[in-house]
Image (tube, rainbow, N blue to C red; front, top):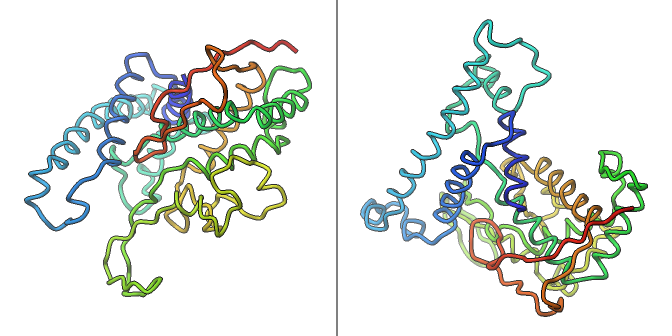
Length: 321
């Protein structure tokens, strides 16, 4: 459910319409396979200069196959947008354009100084968004005190309207602490690889120039030197704390940092906040079959994105103010 929700919203924002069931199925299948390949181990990562390993491991063939599949999906979407932009087919009003239209404007106006290819136009973040939502709900179900506190806040500030608007989202303080704590505990384990620009020594280890460097951001988020009881879900730890996830505090970098920080940070966090607020407002939640919170399976699955190994099953009870 959470995957479908985040995918539909991301799809609508990027492409200007909600996906059909067939399109969403193809889109999700391709995305899942990409995450599996990119998140898995490949000998090529250890010996990147070996052409033989690229062939033997099969990674290169898989990536080329996935590239062709995703290119078909992207090509159809982009060509549809290009057709609508032809004279006589639509107006030139740019106020109602989606992400693809905006990027096509850049490409057409040469505003970036280089052309944008179809492959570069869109790479969805729906999997990471749904994963964060899944973990947030899992942690709240496992911590009834935090769940109750977050629901009281959402329902009080909504003032019985039943609609979570921007003004309400701006006022939600505790729920945002829940999201921040979720991002600390459950975010992609490894930041994107970087290349060392010069030889340097860190922690007594010499890192030669042009070495591929990968930051274990998951370990930073659970380092006891920076966090009290690091494995405990405790949103209140961020009360009056200057630490944020926007790249300035290296204890918490779920989106990376610096010039290469995730460009979808604001969109992803806003989507998580909006979806979680609605889930907390409109439903009370309970575990199935009299399961106790302490018995919940919180096992993580190794992947490019942080995922639960097993799905979360909960029972929704509609809430009527």
